[in-house]
Image (cartoon, rainbow over all chains, first blue to last red; front, side, top):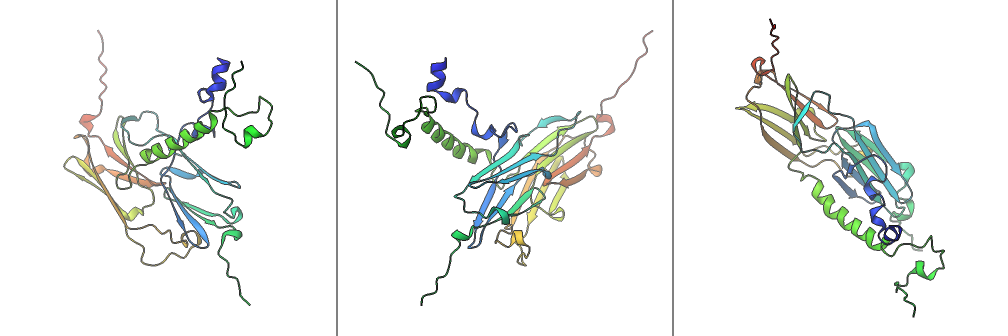
Length: 130
Length: 159
């Protein structure tokens, strides 16, 4: 068995989306727009309150975890379901292109809007010619 | 004769690593398959933007409809009960005044959008007592059941 595990480690490893330990997670719908100064990120997180939202900026990764604040109360029976009770997780990889200190984020009515300013090195620079 | 498995030379195989630290020959393939599944299933799991997910719940007194409608104003959400159907309409107008606050300055103001959905509801609903609440982008409509539809408990004395 150990030989088998060495050859095919996927049977014992964790799936990447569950690695954060928050149980099953779905990827939310999101949009990214770009201007010269910044990236504008819109993530749709219905049912996520401010308390359940985690925004982590690392050097090459931006991780957004949203946990739904609402739980099905006892006594409620689900007749028909289309949404998943799972939390949201979105991991965006970038090439250290974002100035993590200047990220501005706002969560309103289940929509997270974040402004991710580009790192100074990436902004277009005008060079004066003598 | 010795059998040696051929590994495609990469920086990992060129560097001398102790056997325990060497990566499995599958790991590259693995991450490639993960990436493929993530992109294929990722598109599959996100709901198309014109259809919003709706859940139906029930308890003793009410039927509940929960609809995920992130990013709407309360005024732009319309809830109607017509002939045994619950019509949910949400509309967003294109912004006429450019947004000034910092998070919206990056040209990411929401575009105009109109969504609607009609859900068949049970017949025993008191249509005049329907109420709705909108919180964190989720609309909850409470549809009270008629008295006669509620489960009745009759205690019968046993002689």
